[in-house]
Every structure is written in structure tokens, then in C-alpha cells.
Length: 179
Image (cartoon, rainbow, N blue to C red; front, top):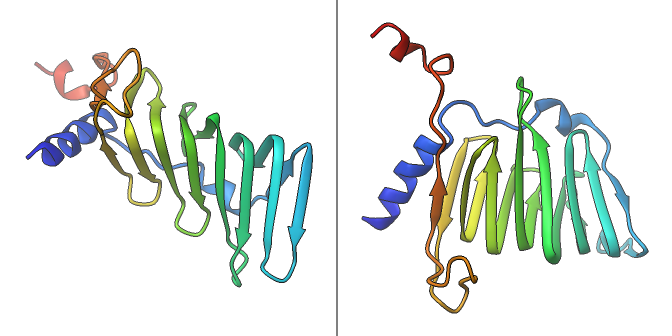
């Protein structure tokens, strides 16, 4: 029942299209770091120190990032930091999706970002936080789970899922204007 409630809240929180900028998929990936090692045989690269990955409007910042490329050329990245952050423009809107956590996994093929440990995701003024957040840009699906006091923060010692949904203006909700 708790999972259903969280999914329902997330549906309300992120109602409407949440797709990332579609053009980003066709843009080159740029990586910067203080140091890098590349293993051609396994198609694995490790970047350390002020790592910045950009692909179109997508920006991921971390202290360490391991990037693997599959045989089809899609990239999968695992980033570590305190915190790792990402930011990406929403498709067709002047609005961004932003996220923070201690570990982040990005799957370029599935267009999915997973945030682990002290995870927070923000779209405009609305935000959600928990121990784990999964954001699938293709299906517009968010999943958030809390944990327990072991992973809590000073502001949220119980480690529970928290959601902040700002009221929508009448201009954003035409159904209320006709009332």
C-alpha cells in the first residue's frame, strides 16, 4: 500500500510530459576530468577528479565516473560523489530536471537515471527525496523508496520518502478556469 501511495503522489507531482530533451540522444558525449584511464579491450574508461559529462543539455558532475560502452555504442555510466548531480532540459519546455545523490547510474540506451543514497530529484519547484530514485525518461516513470534511520539525514532522520508539490496556477490548469 505504501508503494502505491508513493507512485500515486509521484504521478501527481510529475503530471504531464517529463521527457528529456529528445535531441540529446543524437549529440556527442563529452567527458572532462583531472585523470582518465581507458581499457579498449573492455570498452571501459575511469575518470577521476572534477568529472563532467555532457551530452546536449544533459550534464552530470561527479568526483569519479566509470563509463562502459556496449557493442551498439550506447554508454552506461556510474558516478560517485558527495553529491553527484545531473541536470537535463525537458523536451519542448524551458524547464529542467535536476537530481543529486551519492551514487548515480546513467543508462544511455534505456534513457534512465538511478540515484542511490540521499537521492533528490527536482522539476521546477516540485521535488522528491528518498534513499533511491529511478527516473525513466522514455516511460515518464518515477520510483522512489525510503529506507530507515541508517540512511536518514539531519533534516530527515527517519529516511522517509518526502514529496513537495507546489500548487499549480490557474493558467497551468485550464479545467479550473471554467469553474
